[in-house]
Each structure stands twice: as structure tokens, then as C-alpha cells.
Amino acid sequence: MSTAARPRSRRTVTAARRHLAGVDRERGANPVELAVMMPLILVLLFASIQIAAVFLARSTALNAAQSGVNAQRSYQAANGAGVDTATQFLNAAGDWLVGWTAPGPSCVVIDDVEVTCTVSGRSLSVIPGVDFAVQQTAHGTVERVTPP
Image (cartoon, rainbow, N blue to C red):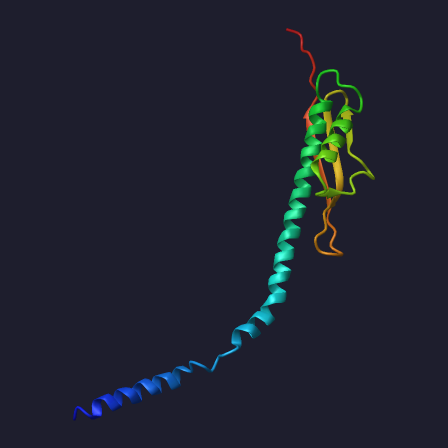
């Protein structure tokens, strides 16, 4: 094999590789892929934000119910102390739990032994038309003086 043929064969092989690799054949494919995938990405993004809003609403309702139980179960607590405390908590908590004012928090003392507080509402809606009901309940025993 002569030395003059060797550089020419390398050029031929390099040109053939470029042709077979199709360097420029997929030009413009990325915008099309993005246009196809973007609705799915947006749906997943808004769904994850909605799920987070539901969990925050549940957490807010549970914390309000626990605050109500703690206030109502204390020694010689006035009637309605739990409801007042839960309402104050919900007023200060923000709007993650909406619609809680219609039924309002309810605290029930059962046989002067147990307190049950329930908070109901709806989660904040990020996606129009999607509405999740939230209800959380907390229980506790009433404090009392026991003889020595």
C-alpha cells in the first residue's frame, strides 16, 4: 500500500462516518419533543403543588384540633375553651384550610373523661375545579385531681 493512498482512505472513512452518524439529520427535534412533553410536565407540576396543599391543609386542621383538645382538657376549663383556641389557631394559620368557618371547629367532652375536637374544611385549590375535603380529629383525656 502506498503512502499516497493512506490519507485519501482516512478522509473517505471520516466522511463515511459523518454520513452514517447523521449529524444534521435530527436538527429541530428538541423543540418538537419539548412541545409534546410540556403539557405533561405542567400537569405533573400543578398536581404536585395540589398534593402539597392538601397535606398542608390536613396538617393545619390537625394542629387546630390538637390545640382545641389541649385547651379543653385542662383542669376546670370553661365550656367552649377548645373551640375558641382552635378558631384562634385557624385564624392565624393562613388560608391552607378554607371553608372551615361554616361548620366551625367542634369540641365535645364525653362523660368528663375524654375530649374530642374535630376540624373540617377544604384544601386550597391550585387546579380549578379540584376540591379536597379535609377533616381531622384529636382526642385527649380531661385533667382532674386525684386523691393521694
